[in-house]
Length: 260
Image (cartoon, rainbow, N blue to C red; front, side, top):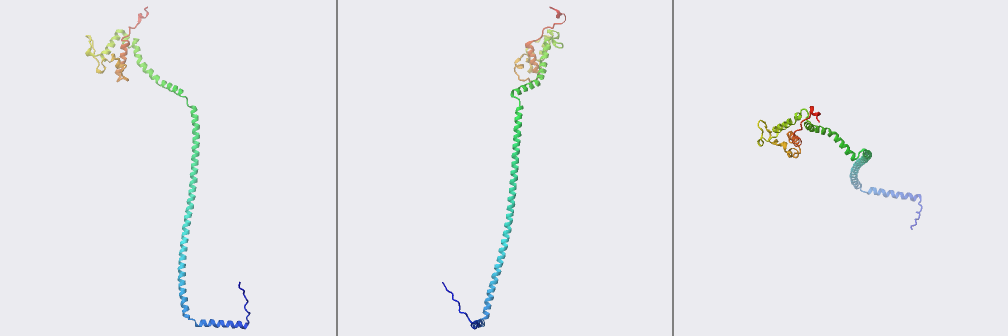
């Protein structure tokens, strides 16, 4: 530990002597020192300092400008990033809302469809009822056509068998036989293979396909699924007439009706 001892108190005369010695020493130094050398070092050091200060200032200014530009660009990037994040959040919110609306619409449509389906099932008739109704509609549409065709086919045969007016059998069985003979000779007779009585005309069919067509049931009745032409249909009717009733009996008219 160092103990500081107070310096001895100086008298005013001693103090003045000390100050005078210091002044003389400084004057001697200033007088005897080479003035031009000290000024030269000061100028060189000042030049170096000025150049360094100017370079440092320029560098600091450049760095300051670069930092300012960097912060400006960073600010722009951050602003754009913030805007993009906001846009993404808004787009996500809109898409979520649209998806929710679509889901709600689908749920509502499914519910409505289910209710309508249940209501429709209650109104659908059974298969049996559908078959019955279908058959009735079919019969209602086809029965008139069937009856018309049936009457057109059956009525001439009925009139012929009943010796109705306008039929060949109206004048008796002989007239009916003569009509059947003429019909066969004109439409079906094989003139080359039959004996024609003298004085009787039998031209035969003009088409060889119709020869003996009225006496061949396998061709007119059992062979074809559908007739080739109307002549085949007429031949089928003539075939049935020859097989069942070549000529009806003489009609009973006039006084014969009252005979026992």
